[in-house]
Length: 118
Image 1 (tube, rainbow, N blue to C red):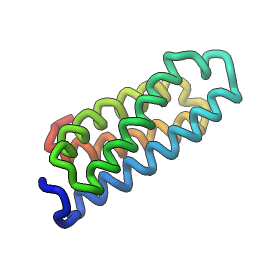
Image 2 (cartoon, one colour; image 1 turned 30 degrees about the vertical axis):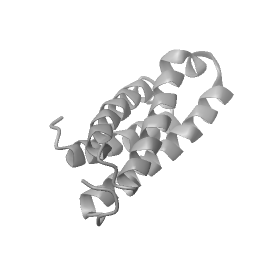
Image 3 (cartoon, rainbow, N blue to C red; image 1 turned 180 degrees about the horizontal axis):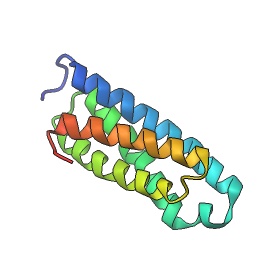
């Protein structure tokens, strides 16, 4: 991958999934802070904050076709999967369940782009 080439369908899918994931995680952080208690502890906030940062970085690097985009996509897949698992610990909450699903979709798109098996 070189800077400035064409964005293919896999790359666009990854960009879209990462943007959706980091947006959803940002909203979920707000939800968690409003709920308080176990929602606001670092076991939940840490994975959400990590996913925001890595998913945004991954989307940016894929958009500009950084030679490091594939590596970042592999990392993003792992981080998004961890975030989904954390959110699923509170799957009776629809906000948390939605975030888990969006993060899983992001992880799948990133794994596909990176050529990593689940």
